[in-house]
Image (cartoon, rainbow, N blue to C red; front, top):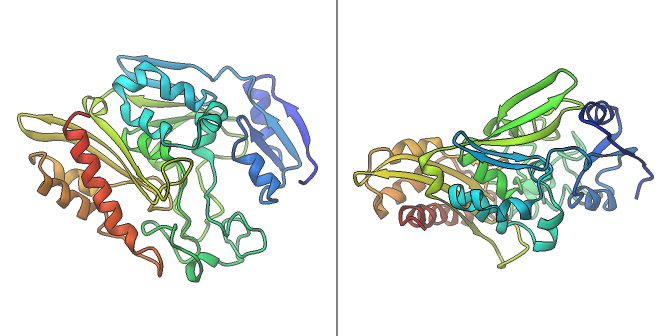
Length: 326
């Protein structure tokens, strides 16, 4: 592991100033960063520990839910306000990692985790995300686990977060704090498509930190569900996942939300599929049509064409479960 200095931030302003310095990385739970450092993918000269900052609260009220960036995944998953009013969030968290990891990992860190693409994490291979301009080994390599949505000629790595998919489906906002103050960004706009700059994954500016995630209260949030399909039942990343939410009134769908994971280069909001559901009855044929629309733009690689049908079936099953009020 590359040698590094360690600083513990005493307040938010100090954390922002220290994090903005070249060669610095921020650490909280460390469940992803430490592995990247051990694998020589990340080589920070200085680690900025922000675990002492007061961003751990889980707050719920009439306006919605606020999750501090340093709240632990396990605490959020177990909070009654989350389980009862935003079940898709709790389900996504429980589908993530292992209990031991969830006890350490933070909400902000989960949103900032890096892709599990084997080429990104193997410094002996070409990866534009890790080393811009070096090429993308996945395009003609082992790409069974890679993206069918949102990819480019420079990168087809999938985004790893389950939580981010659920939050995108619920129109969450991310509260950021940096040298110029605070700003709110829709989570759907927080993560970037790779394009020709895959090394830039979020809209964070130097020194900016995630302070909290805010989720608006909505009728469809209570009837929401997260479904994750993977190669094994635990401690595995998604082949395909769907976060859905429905508001059904008078036998028809009034509001819906659909987001996909495991198949795209960022948490993928399927807005055209949501529009298709509006005013239709919550029946299998409606759900199949929405799933077809959600994957309409998919572009498979040599080994991952199966993901398109798998993702469609995942959407249909998730919508059916949500419609039943489970």
